[in-house]
Image (cartoon, rainbow, N blue to C red; front, top):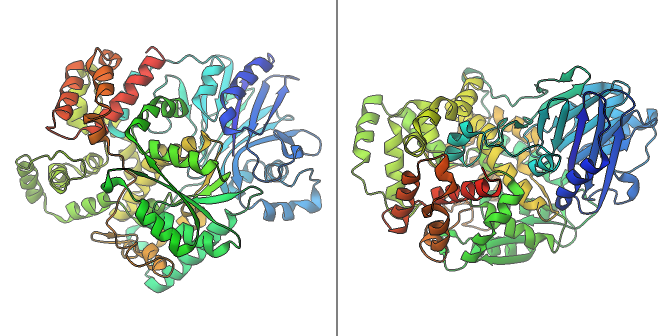
Length: 626
């Protein structure tokens, strides 16, 4: 797990070491252990690569990066981990000389033999930067699900790339607002891949390769795609057989993520996913297993520490629990610094704090990310499946009746959720699923944005694209594909990456193991979800591993009590940032911002999550004077 940055000068002018050093310094938190540089201006194009290292496997300086092949014609820098590097090394050793014991060098030798096809052989979470000096060609590659980030920008003859946007800004890329993407940010709390809220800065999509050579910058191209079978092609399988296979694949996924030359632990929230991962870590570990969680003092609905402690006692882990106080939200500018863009998911706050606590004891943690995406855990899946079975005329009647229901002053109140379901059920398929998945739905965004900046077709485009790509599969499979290519990719994975790497902590996700996900995609819907019950196969496995009651708790996200905070200790923050001539008012309607804030502060409705989304936007605009 590291930080990567660099530049390609298409005109052959040398890349200045000072530029590389500024980029590397901005990523020091991602790689506190060492740094390395490569500069090659022997011919056009010229390249410079900077690497900040967090040492996990082979802690010696011999494994510092970029790392070459035998003659130095191939140089590789890696952010992430390659879990099958030992098998690949064994395959390559008869024909190659190795200088290190780590995973990065394997990529250089594999590329010598297989070229670009080497990337598809890698099992892990990664961004690979590879310089082929003979061909004067830079290759960038991102892992299949996008666990590790890569941003890039081109300005004339200069091409820049980095693990985080701040390194591009350090190289001189100007921070300019792409106002056309504000609607997407308001909807999701992020801008969908490949776009960003910075003009001219893009994300490399997952499972993609991008090359730069004398001919210029090529368009990204995919080397792998997640496929669900067509609805008529789903093969039947006995549930006990499926559970046995999932147990085997998940066990392997955990086992290969326990490889490290540094202390390792688990993030344990007390939910299904992290508890099962923790149980499998305990099962496969001979020594002490450390577990970590956070909760909210005085807010029992959001505090899962008691559940996590119960699982920890059952498993016999060395458990560390800490609490989050309202003043912790003052870390919002710190969170913004690490995300670089405004980020609407407030659970970044407890993620940051639990990562900080974990880093005091370990360097690597396993987590439960991906269980909902792989085994259909989200309640909105149930809403979509239920609405699909209701005749359109009845859905329209339900939508008309939604407005008579009280909205409720609590974000998770049952009446609020029922009103939300009924109000969206009458809309076209993509729009209603969109409406259950957003901070601001289309009418709210239209109210916030000036007419000339409201582009609903663009706001919906990432959902439309996902549904088009998965056409022909069952609705549940299409929802799983949608979630994997949107919310997981642009919310959950960046949150875990930035908040863990802010402390130089590596986070690994066994439930996002490629063989596991590929197998789960082939399973019938009934193995994953029946009505309001999700993650059926996973829970069947968990009954053998966890104490009674843990698996039967209602679905509970990693929430934050924003509603109470913004009406209490953090009320001045809302007043100062959103009611007093907000900078966001230059791009959104200030009267709509004010009405939303006053509705929440007056207790008429719960707008805590929407306020957080606007606050992070406001602070980002002020930071860059946009």
